[in-house]
Length: 322
Image 1 (tube, rainbow, N blue to C red):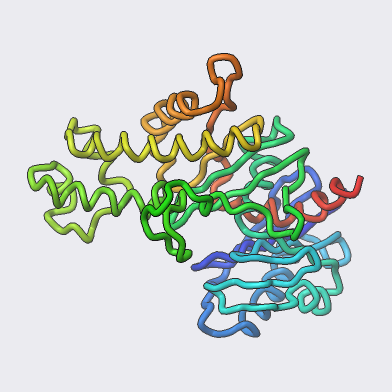
Image 2 (cartoon, helix red, strand yellow; image 1 turned 120 degrees about the vertical axis):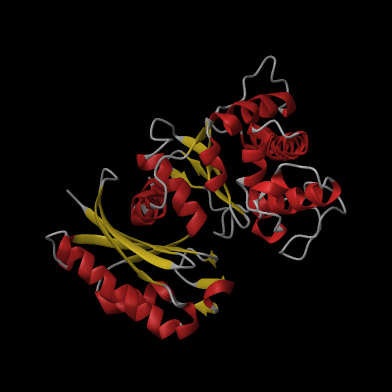
């Protein structure tokens, strides 16, 4: 049995876990990220956390085949962080730094790609060989898994599902472009759409849900109000699901995966989101009356997906070379 360590670098916490070759998460721990402390402090925390979690798992570093790291940014196949804005990293040879400190092979992947890989290895897509994962949060992340390995593209940076042009000349996106899918279907976009609707409809029940303070709006508010049969909220939710389904349908037509895996807090709406979303994907997919689109399902691993996927980076690369 081989064992791997996965590291998922988040904005708030760095999560570290020991995973076996079947994708089972054996032990995990987390430490605060504290990106403002600088690169050296973060790397020291990661090194210490790897040693600690291996010890808690009853293993030694000699039992570990490799360490995988999910980075919130662009990385190269050689293990360099090209850019991780939230960490303040640029052209950082992270794999070499960590590898020299631990005496182990170290692999890097984009954090969203790692989460997608984790779901295919041990979560919602465990019975699939290809799946597209979409995560709606502050932005839209995701990854495309083909034959059990991350689709990385010719330069190794993988996919950016949030940043294809969804509407020419549309809403300004945080990336600087206009009309990105993220600007219409992220949780941030839903909050913006909700606030606009509330300002135009002062009688909406959404105002009562936030005690009259529009700054308290989150992605749950329009769904809660829609369930109370508020017409304004129902319109917001319907429009949002239409945006989301149309964008996903475009990706289905481009890649035709076996499964669409949906992540992010908005998915906690369960069937209230997923049933109409699947209907919308079918509505917009090419020839859906003859070629059934893949089902969209909720992710099952939560925050563990990134740890498991990062740990499995070596296995994924081995499959790429097979």
